[in-house]
Amino acid sequence: EVQLVESGGGLVQAGGSLRLSCATSGFAFGDYAIAWFRQAPEKEREGVSCIRRNDGSTYYRSSVKGRFTISANNAKNTVYLQMNRLTPEDTATYYCAAIGMMYYADFGVDTLCASVNPVLSWGRGTQVTVSS
Image 1 (cartoon, rainbow, N blue to C red):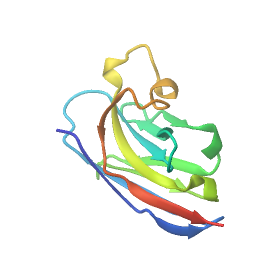
Image 2: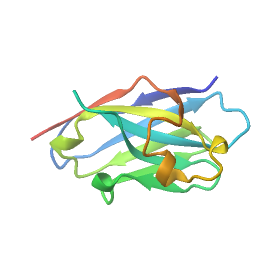
Image 3: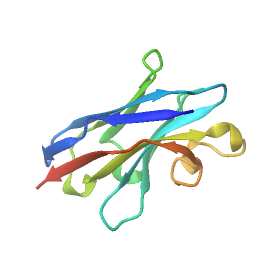
């Protein structure tokens, strides 16, 4: 069973930085991507970024490109999301998610990580609040 545990959220002023961590376990054989989604109050959950375990390919939604960086430490089974130049619009609960890339052979991270539909497993989330 895939398990995902987020940490690193908090309160930060606009322009500040946070680093989120997602500790993963329970992966069997297969090609997975680890993704970060976020959900603000009364808004739909949206894909923020992801990284594919097999080849390291990444996805970023347009509003975070150049500010957020996703990385993976495979030895620690941990994925990180470094978030810089945060704005109040980044305020949300951030969720770590596992996507089974092997079930979608014809699609890449740009397609699969932008949608909640391919997600196999979710973490419980960590709150990020950016004050103005």
